Length: 110
Image (tube, rainbow, N blue to C red; front, side, top):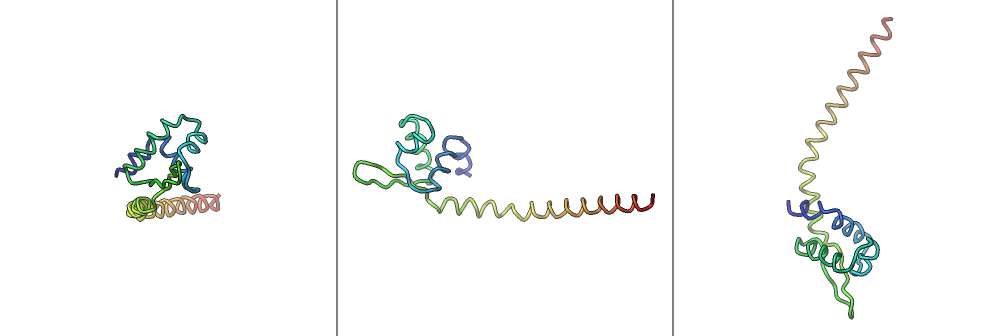
């Protein structure tokens, strides 16, 4: 999944987290992350190429904002694994309950 590969880079993940609160300019992103504008622009270009952000020009500024569609796709993909994990957690819960019962039974025999 391309989204995961793109977000595996920490600076890009931080940018996405910043944009979660609303649109920002390159300068605002760079300042908040303590990086130079060219570096922030490079990461924004990768995010844009992956379809995660879109650009909205306003006068001489360009605002970047998250696109919701790719994150909905990611959520759908992750949901396909959720039932597997829920089943495993249910089995773990049953196992822990069995252990507690065994310990309770052993302590009552003493």
